[in-house]
Amino acid sequence: MTSLWKKQKKNMPNLKYNQNNITLHLQDCIEWMQSVDSDSIDMTLTSPPYDNIRNYEGYSFDFESTAKELYRITKPGGVVIWNVADQTVNGSETCTSMKQALYFVECGFKLHDTMIYLKKNPMPSSGKRYHQSWEYIFCFSKGVPNTLNPIEVECKYANLNANQKYRGVDGKKNYKVTKRNAVSKVKNVFEYIIGGGHTTKDKIAFEHPAIMPEKLAEDQIKTWTNEGDVVIDPFAGSGTTAKMCLINNRKFYGCEISEEYCNIFIKRLEQFETKLIENPLMMSFLDT
Figure 1 (cartoon, helix red, strand yellow):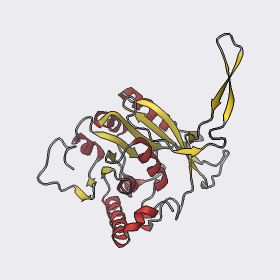
Figure 2 (tube, rainbow, N blue to C red; figure 1 turned 180 degrees about the vertical axis):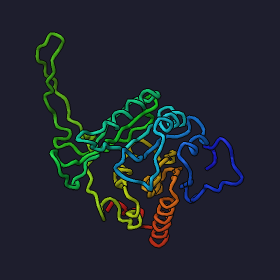
Figure 3 (spheres, rainbow, N blue to C red; figure 1 turned 45 degrees about the vertical axis):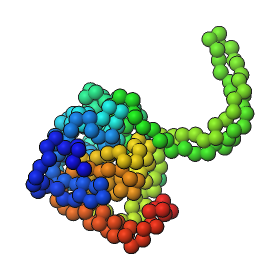
Figure 4 (cartoon, one colour; figure 1 turned 30 degrees about the vertical axis):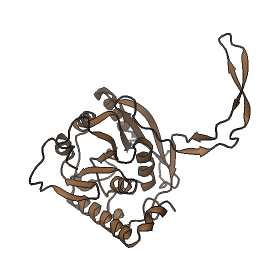
């Protein structure tokens, strides 16, 4: 797993974990990405620290430099999945998420899709506004995405003939008999139950202040990549992206600036791998 790196270092003191195609470095994300080859990453899946909604041990990050580096290292046709939300300050949402989206586009990315992560059971909020129940999932692509494996559902009237109505250039109604599709892509609003036992069953993960739902990570990984592709997370946190890459046979590289969070990541992956060794059939039943 050294083909991504500009220089093969003999001593890598910041390398914290390197097993089963999962690699983690204790390192600032800009420094780490600067060591990665250009046009080498199939997908970035991350939820960076956004606004000041969480403290994250006092760490912050340089957003503009991060966006520029992500563009450089993403393959043509690769994607960046950027999960963020806005803080409310002095009665107004900050609009940070949309400002970041516009800057990604300035860097050269296309805003390929604006998806929504909808929490089925959000925390109640006070004040003169509705409960805040969703976050952005931006999909930025470097050109046209190479891969789309859409999540599909069976259509209610699958394969039945239907009269499709449309208007021609003269404005008159026209009808055409067409066979309905057997399956349809889901909408770009993804709903998840969150909290203990739902976001993840890994108790160790909840030592991190903000956990991405495992199902969200898995849905995005399976949609935009194929088995064997390279996925990174420059804000690796508790290791959700890494764990879903392990389960779905993707190669993972990531970095995390907090040693405490690195330790959570490592313990979580080690505990999960121990379960797999004890019960190899578990891989077949992870979704149940």
